[in-house]
Length: 460
Image 1 (cartoon, rainbow, N blue to C red):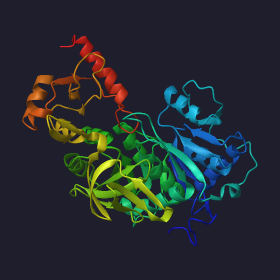
Image 2: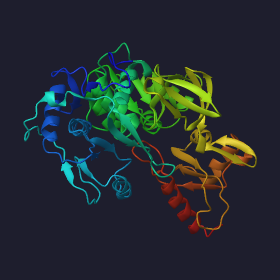
Image 3: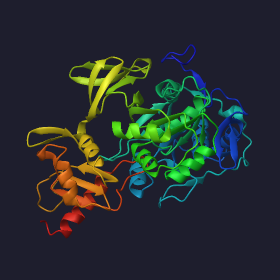
Image 4: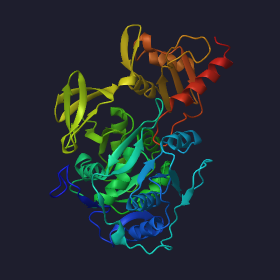
């Protein structure tokens, strides 16, 4: 266990920043560094002005402001809530579950009827010192984080401070950076997502890393942010952003490690990224309920190595992650093959597996084959769960971004690559897929596009 003398039944406390070294870099901006001491001062000042509420929804987009809001809320014994997105629908859902709540933000929010506290770069207005932010109870619920909701209603998961710290301390070994004690992170994923939170915020607060405050998504911005942080650099990203970088092909500052998660990374894309960006790629497998669960260097075969404090178990027909330190058994949301307690083979999300004409396939696997078709810049296979209100039998649909190709040509290419049962009758060309901040595709957005397309075709 990473906590000296800690056992689950004791009321131990642990620092919010560990080790706390006031002059060490915490975050980087275009104009220079923000030290740990500066972040602590800003958090102390903000804490003095917060409302007396049990929950604070953290909408902050800049990573330093997100961290300041997190630390301030925790120092006031509040639970920090990370919304799945910035929509009014999500806020209404959160407000229904947690009526006594307020919002922290550094930008314009969707219309809400909750009190909004602005998080700025100012450290004035409070007399709290950094010591007030030093420690909180390990066993208290620190954050509530939500799934993306890409397959339905987002679900929340409570995390104690002990769980979050334990996860952060395991990141270096998981991404092969144990020999690099002071990495600089540039992340293309938001802080509110569990992957982004662990690898670009908790890694900073509890793992000696530092991170750029921005969330760049375009190649030129990624290159600029990488140039604004010192080596060794770690790019925390997704397959969608990685594909864009590879296709762009521009020069980047030297990267020590590329980390990818949120969706399966094909062997072809991983290999292309390693050649183009001249850095090893590490892939993370995880889910909101457990955090980062396993990792692998890619391309390196199908096996995943679990975190040192996790074990893969099977009992009573269930597969789960055992987190013995916290007495937890967390079900896998995916179809996995347990090779041994330390290694698994991942076959796909449970809801990702489909059966067409008695034949099984993975939607992610079909999508991977679609993306290999020449001229397809982005795309996805989708099986609607209902008839889209048009009286049609639910069938496989492919959405494609392929400005220089046609559905007929793409269908012919797919016929050469996959079983005829999975070749989609409907291929919908789009200018861009409605991806969210982590590259995932909400089912409701796909449903609306498909319904509009099929209706315009006259149900043919």
